[in-house]
Amino acid sequence: MTEINSACDRYPLHKAVFEGNLRKVSSLLRDHDIGQRDCYGNTPLHLAIMLGHKECVFLLLEKNAPIKVKNEAGWSPLAEAISWGSRSIVKAVLRKMKEQNQQSVDKNRPELIEALRGLGDFYVELKWDFSSWIPLVSRILPSDTCKIYKKGCCIRLDSTLIDFADMKWQRGDISIIFNGEAEGKKSFAILDNEKKVFQRMQDQESDAEIDEEVDLLMSCDIVSATMSTKPITFSRSQDGWFFKEDKIENIGTYVANVYDVNGMILVTRKRREHLTQEDIVKNKAVLESISKGSTTMDAVPEIKRKKSLVPPKVESCTWESYINSETENVPTLGRSLTVKEDKKTIKATVAMNEDFPLQLEPLLNVLEVIAPFKHFDKLKEFVSMKLPPGFPVRVEIPVLPTIVARVTFQKFDADISIPASRYFIPRDFKEDPHRFPDL
Image 1: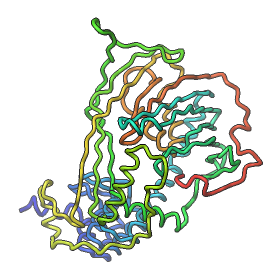
Image 2: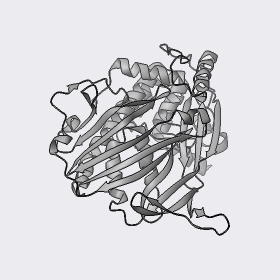
Image 3: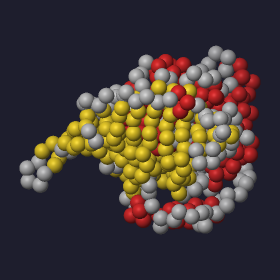
Image 4: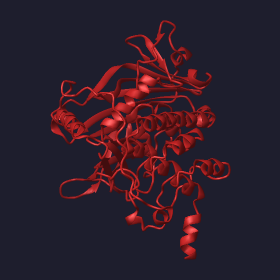
C-alpha cells in the first residue's frame, strides 16, 4: 500500500492536470518541473491534451511547456493534439513548438559562433546522389553538388536542390548565407539567385500559414519515423570473388576504408484514428501517385479547412488507476488508437579517410547552420553517430522512408580566398518573406 501511495504522490502536477484542477495546476507550476515525465513518459501537457482539459493546455503552453518531447510510446504532445482533434489546441501547440525551436536556435547561437571563429577557413564540395528501392521513383531522382564556403564566422552554401515537396524535387539556384557578425534574424538568409530575391528567417508565421499547416496535420496520418541506432555496428566491407579482402576505395584524392553499417532500422509508426474514410481514400491516392513516379499534382486533392472533431468519449479512470497501471496496460486516455508499425532494414555504407583535413566536430557546427534543409538535417544526424576512425568522405543515408542519398565529400581546399561580399545579400536582391514557405 505504501508503494502505491508513493507512486500516486510522486507527480503532484500531473495529478492536478489529470483531475483538471486549474487552480492547483497554477499553484504547483511555481515550484514544480513543467517538463517532468511520469512513469509512462507523459508530461503534464501530454495528459492535459489526451484528457481534453483545454484550460490546462493553454496554461501549460503559456508557461512554455516543452513540445518536442515524446512519451514511452513515442508520441509528442502535438501528435496527441492531432488525435484529439481540437483545432484550437493543435494550432496553439504547433505555434508554441515553432517558438521553442527559435528559442533553441537563439540559445545556441553564441556557442555556435564561437566554434565557427575557431575554425580555419575552407571550401568543401558535397555531391548528393539519390536512389530509391521503388524503381520508377528512382528514375526521377536528381543529383546535386553543394558548395560550402566558410570564412571566420560566416558560411555560404550554394545548391541547385531546394527541397522535396508536393511530390517532386524542387530545383533552382539558391544560396544559404549565415553571417555571424550580423544581429538576430539578419544573420541568416536564403537567396533565390534566379529571381534575385531573398528571405530571412521568419520571426513568426502568419495565422494563414499556421492554419494551412494545421489543415495538413489534421488531414494526414500522424507519423513517427525514427532511426534505430542502438544496435548499429560497423564491419569492413569485403571485396573480391574468391579471396575476400577489406574493401578500399579511392574517393577523389583520398584513400578510404569502406565499412558496412549493420543493424540500421527505420521504424515508421502511423496513427489515423483522427481521419475520416474520405481522408484515408485521398491519402491513398497520393501514395499511389508517388509509387508510380508521378511528378505532377493532378492526383493530389485540395486540402480543405478542417473543423474540430467531436471529442472522444473519455473512459472513466481515476488518477490512482492510471498511475499504478502496468506499462503494457496503461488506460487509453484520449481517442482509441489506430496504429500501424513498419520496420525496414536500411543498407548503409560509410567510407572513412584518416587524413582528411576536416574534423567531424567542425563539420557538425557547419551542418547546424544549414540544417533548415531537411536532407542536411539527416546528414547531421548520421555523422553524429560514433563512426569508425577518420572522416566520412562518403556516406549512404536514408533521407525519406523510400529514398537513400549517397553523400560524397569530393573536394576540400583550406587555402581558398573568397571575397567578403559573397557572405552578404547583393544590393539588387529584393526581400520576399514567402519565397521559401518551409523555412
